[in-house]
Amino acid sequence: MASESDKWPDEPDEPDPESRWDDPENDLVSVPSVEPPDLDPGSEGAGIEVDAEVARLFWAAVVYANIALGGVAIGLLLVLFRGQVTVGGVAVAVGLFALYRTYDLYRTHQERAVGGDGSGEDARGVDGGREPD
Picture 1 (cartoon, rainbow, N blue to C red):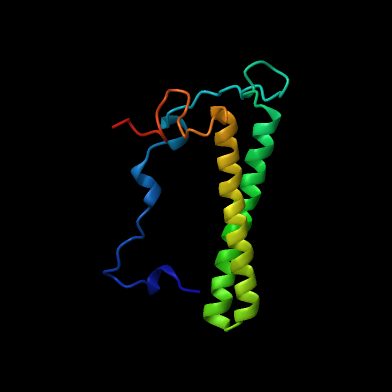
Picture 2: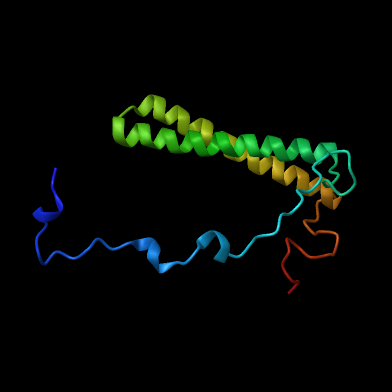
């Protein structure tokens, strides 16, 4: 082990990084505690009531969109990097079909929400959200 006499004469003492602060436990700002919100699903204000048909269409669209994203991405990777055209092509086809089904579910919901009169106008009389010409 090195003794005190083995030090170089011009070597400075090790700096103490904690010497910059006096007493961090007492000097820091105290953060008040906050009660967590009531997450009981039966309580008032816990969530928004959604029609069962809308919820079903939403979750079906989410599943189809995930399948579309995964199918197209994995299919293209298989075709481009591994040269597996058959498997990759099937994955891309499945992904594109799922993407079409996602769009179809969205269009079905829009038609039901507007009333299905086939005019393409919403309840305000605006065609597709655009201002009339």
